[in-house]
Amino acid sequence: MHIDANGLRLWVEVDGPADGEPVLLISGAMESAIRWPSPFLSDLVAAGYRVVRFDNRGWGRSEQAAPGYDLIDMADDVADMLTALEITQVHVLGQSMGGMIAQEFALKYPDVVRSLTLLSTTPGIGDSGLPLAHDDLLAELIPLLMQPIPVANRGRAKNMVQARSLRTGTRYPFDAEREKMLATVEVEDMFMDDCQHGEAIESTPSRLDRLSEIVAPTLIVHGGLDHVYVADHAVALAVGIPNSMLWFVDGLGHEFPEAFVAELSPRFLDHLRHHPVA
Image (cartoon, rainbow, N blue to C red):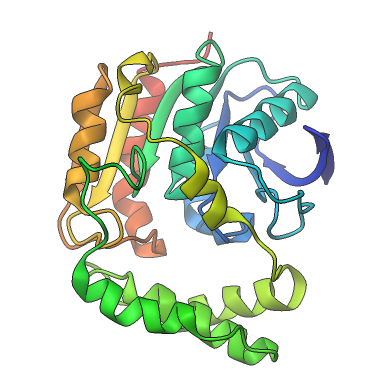
């Protein structure tokens, strides 16, 4: 369904019992809500939670906004969306860019966030105290990103799958067939050439000096082979956020494969149960 939020039309999907504690999933840059692994959604619903996922502005089935917005604006999107859904308190999980939006949301709307989970993310890019992406990844990824966007959907999907394969660790095999299927759906039904997510990330100030203001109990999950945001980014989050726990997952890259659900779901559900919505 579409919801009017912050002057935009956002695509939102809600699963699980209407009276369940709400769990909000915030996707990464240029990732639609279809990318959350189905077994993960099933685990949350089976545990009695009401799961809310949506397409961020500028991607998927949500409306594009005029250029010039940042992650704080995207956090306001979340706030308006939850108001429309009559949700006053929520568990929040954000992945990659979604984790950055989740931090901004927790900082600006502390009374709404009952618990926070940050997956494969950073307190901010461009901060002199945090390293850039791993050189090996940049050497392979930059030439791919610098290519003109293919005109044909097949070429666009191929580029998306290749970029994801470069971010995969060694803990789980790369599921090329699943990635191809998801990429094909996105480029045929949801692709936006003028997506501004990268610009939004770059224009948002680092949160490194504001992390101590996050009051929500926080679980930080980070891959040991995440070469997009290397380990220092996760450590900075753990040091900066007062009530936080850091879980390094050996061999995991900058990814959320279906095979990881069996490991993540028990930890995530335990985190939620320890901090129930009032």
